[in-house]
Image (cartoon, rainbow, N blue to C red):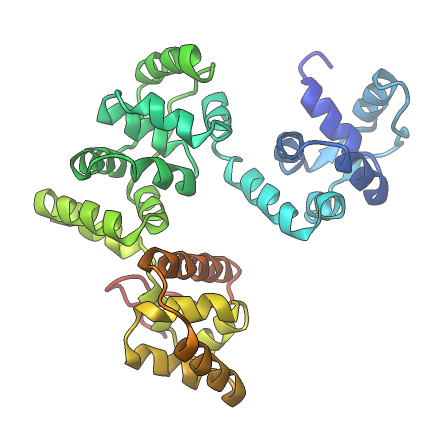
Amino acid sequence: MGSITNEEKAAILVLSLEEEYASEVMKHLKPSEIKRLGKFMSRVSTISSDTISSISKEFCSLAKEKGRLISVRDDFTRNIVMKAVGEAEAENILSEVSSVRCDDNPITEKLRDVDPKVLMDFTRSEHPQTIALILAHLKPEKAAQILENFTPEMQFEITRRMATLKSVPQEYIDEIAQTLEKEIVSGATTSQDIGGVRVMADILNKMNRASENSILTALEDTDPELAAGIRNLMLTFDDILQLDDRGLQEILREISSEDIGKALKLVDEGLREKVFRNMSKRGAEMLKEELEIMPPIKVSEAEVSQRAIIEIAKKMEAEGRIVLSRGDVQDEYV
């Protein structure tokens, strides 16, 4: 039992309970605690009865002793988290649990909990390579928020390094960890694959259009091949509107009329008509009326709606409900 951490013991205890009781326990935990437990729970396939018995005694018999192996169903963690915090919050927590399974190190977990404003102040005076390494450990939304605060020249330097990051030497990470320990977080990480073209594409997808174009233009001037690789992995609102009719109809059923109305403010008439054709007659009429009476909105507001729709499309693609093509890359069907 000495090799099992307290968090792992808590997770095993929860897994030993029936879903109804497990969800009651989870209701009393903070989201950050649920994430930590969920990370371990999602990796477990079986738990021996001896382990459960020992942990149950340690927790003053709070769990029932099992005389067999517990087979943890694939949907067990999802079900108890949903019952504890509701479907919407559960999806956020479970997506983070999934994203950190292969990225399980102290610096990553702690950086994700740091306020973006604190990270902005910290990275302001750092070398672009250091900033690139830090941003590569963050979720794309937070990384984009920080990246937007740099000058176009600095954005270019950072993104160029992020897109080419691969395996980072342990000594370099140790050096950064020591600095972060004094300023923000403590801990170190192991040498691992981070950053790269796909991460950079995800981050640019979260940024405003002006910053996105500025960065890509700068990259194209110095490394056209790298810029093309990033563009090919980025998903734009126009890419979504290039879906076949069936795929577009699938997406339209999932998004709000407010978001689609604002998003269409930035597209040409031809693409608007394609959207109208893939709606019911009544739905298309209502959307047209909404667009006619909608007051002028900021470009940034329309872009927010477009990005919200992009996120829905990416989720649907991950679920296998639609097939998306990015940029100029077109897959053939056989």
